[in-house]
Length: 82
Image (cartoon, rainbow, N blue to C red; front, side):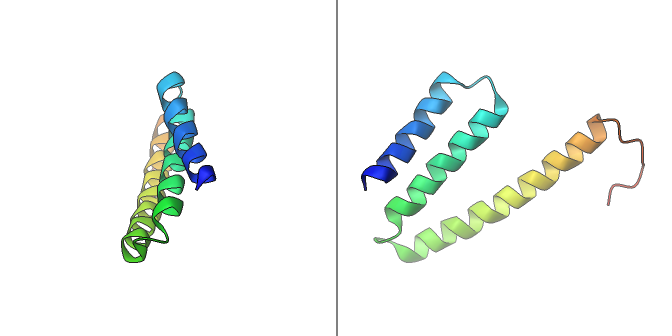
C-alpha cells in the first residue's frame, strides 16, 4: 500500500510543481491512474477492470489524435491522413 501512495503523491506533486511541460503532466497523470488501479484492485475488482479498459482506450485515442496533430503541424506535406 505504501508504494501506491508514493505513486499517487509523486504524480500529484509533479503536476503541482511542473505544470508547464505537457509531457510531465501526461507522465504524472499516468502515475496517478496507475496508483488508483493498484489501490482499488483488491477491493472493487470489476470497477477497476472497467477503469483499466477505459484508460487504455483513452490513451490509444489520445495518442492517435496527438500523432494526427503532429502530422498536421509538422513538416509532413502529404495530404493522405490515413
